[in-house]
Image 1 (cartoon, one colour):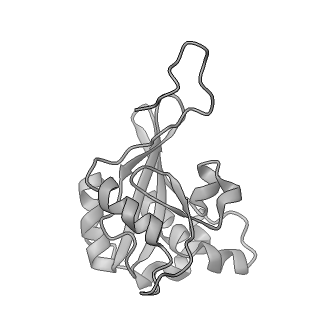
Image 2: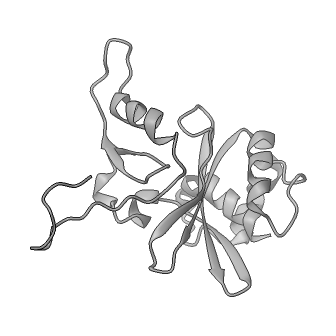
Length: 175
């Protein structure tokens, strides 16, 4: 059932913060939102193949992340419905031996260590951020991200790491 409470916390974290709630993942605070969504199509424990069914039943874009062995954030499931008018929810899947647990991600930029980049747009496929653009003639202010997503979405999701400094023996050209 942690999946249900994590989804509700992720969808309504601003509502809960406005109510003064400190721990948005506590299910007692999320019961008030339970009837707004269709969880009947979800079987527990929730598997990744169940996520698109839940998205379509509730008109949501759901993104699921986890940690790898080096404690890096990795995308597990990225919704094809991102960058639409549908509401997005980001979840973190914690795995410990045979036990898994879902928690809501209320601020993906803080989790990724990019907290100062709040005025930037995120590509969910590669977890890179892009600046907001000035609107073009069509009114599109996400032009840089949209161009990037066209190419990036052709690949499997990943977490791209760009080296900040090159060691003495490394080439200056990055391919």
